Amino acid sequence: MKLTEVAAAVIEQRGADGITEFLLGQRAPGTFYPGFWEFPGGKVEAGETPHDALVRELREELGIEVVRADPWLRRQHVYEHAHVRLNFFRVREWHGELHDHVHSALAWQRADGLTVSPMLPANAPVLAALALPDFYAITHAGEIGIDAQLLALAHALEGGLKLVQLREPKLDAPRRAAFVHAAVDLCHQYGARVLVNGDLALAEAAGADGVHLPAVQLAAQTLRPDLPLVAASCHSTAELERAAELGCDFAVFGPVRATATHPGIAGIGWDNFAAALAVPPLPTFALGGLSRADCDAAQRAGAHGIAAIRAAWEG
Picture: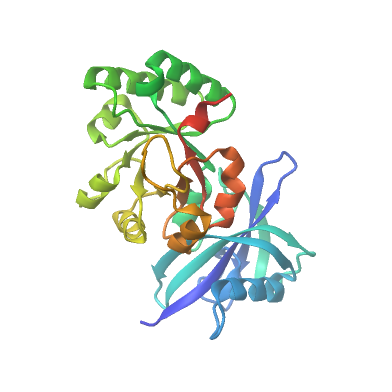
């Protein structure tokens, strides 16, 4: 079956309470999957890039002009009638009045709870990806001390932190286990999700939400760990593809800049980061000497958001 390239748009707006909403359209009668809900978009025509197709489709379908569309995610799906590769963009800025010409209805939705159904089968992983926050904090209790890290973690959680990786190679096994149990309990008190770096057994024992696979472990893993969240550290496009094949929920990629964590390794910079990602096969966080102030640049380069160690606990 021929592979068809499709451009798909996650069109965003801020709700009245400041929470981001995205637009879905209901497929019309007489089409494949009538009544199902989808992200707006359409086929990439000959001579077009996915971005070109996105701009054209949103103009033709919805009557809006794209101001900013960041590459975000690429997914393949085989339907009964077609094999499609969906190139998703986050349309963060646009103008014009919505006038739909192809759907039965439009609806603004939120990642934390849809009010419409059913969704097209290819969209389930996309909805899960939209539920990920744009900041991924990584602990370093082995450097600053367990008590100091737990205090900093509590402060960050009070400030709204929702995704945490417990990465503690400098702690011995007993202290690492004690820290992980305490940190998982603390994160869950605030409704945050937490992953343990590299240790599936400890993640399960502590009741963590998932495991974060270092690149070496990613290469050796043959099956996706049986936890709700699985992430991976990647340093090449091949590793990103491997993470997607394994069924990881997201990845981190870098380093964008030189870091104290890996002295002597030069950062790749934003241009090389963007070229390496193109449109990544899974949500990808930029990593390496970054802070929250870099999130916009990261997203323009194709990242879902940023991951940070030291900057996560400052202030």
